[in-house]
Length: 478
Image (cartoon, rainbow, N blue to C red; front, side, top):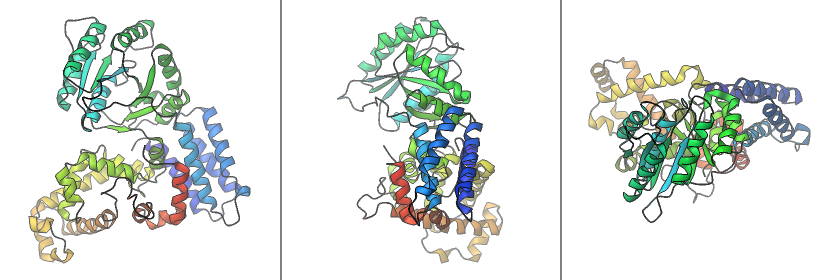
């Protein structure tokens, strides 16, 4: 999971507060000290941590609470609210428009060399390709040897048209020719990759300015290495002063403890973060939405985000299949589809009850290995067994036959069947048919409450506590 160490520390601090026999000022102070320590270790600026801690303390003022109020919930809501405030710089000013009735959108990417800018261009274009856009890539990076080859390779892998030159040395000419070419081909999103440097230097900014003036982009995206931590503030400010940066993408968020510092520093510059890069591969890319990010960071999950990922990753015919009974065959299709949804840890973090702390302690690799073993077991089952809705069908003799065919122990096959029952129970309550959590329902949060483990729901204060938390966080989806 992104920022697993930070998420584990924050979730752990709130869990200890929830288990405390008495929640008084001393218990809250200890919790806030743990949270402050976790944020400082994630390289969040000291001044920011101090302000966040003060606001949480003021928002969770125990003496101001009404008699009988849930003090644990008040502290948890205050923490969630202040983390959202810390990471939220506002809405981006532009988003691409799909369809030939609109002019082609031009998005220009800028950043220092080594930030992952070229790969991020391909990830960004692929994200919109999967949403029905017709994107194209233009390589205007003539400074770095191999830049065009890298973009060409990524574009081919994602099946996205590209433009560049091995002989032309003028980046402005390449950018203009590429944009004009794809405008004639009616591409609705044209992504222009520009040169980077090892440091912020005048030549880089002048070249960016010239390409920007020549192509007149609808959006300039600054790509920044998340491992630099709070130094992101100075970088983002310098780029914003040179070109009209309208959004930021933070890369290398997988496994870097300083990512929290980078996100909070960028937010301090009032630059909207629109995506975060979570790995080297093209699917390792996710929309950055502050409220759902914080919810996952605190171990509260993000069911609407999970439903969106399922709908985006699965073909329409398979999606129709999984909206029915959750058979072993459906579970097999789901496990196969997980490889298209992004890193497994991200998927786990979207399920309420799977906190970042669990993922941090090695559960992600263990979960991946278990799914591979389950797939091997299901490959040894008949179609009748996979499509079966009667749990009594898998009797002792069938279990032994499947164990022999898959080369797995009988106990493991039985364990997989029990796991299927558990997931089926959760799956039946997931709002797959309406990604807005069944807005026609009298209470749209009931499906969410049904999926959250009872122990966690009790910590949240039941359904009413969940409702208050959602009000505190605001809408989960933009």
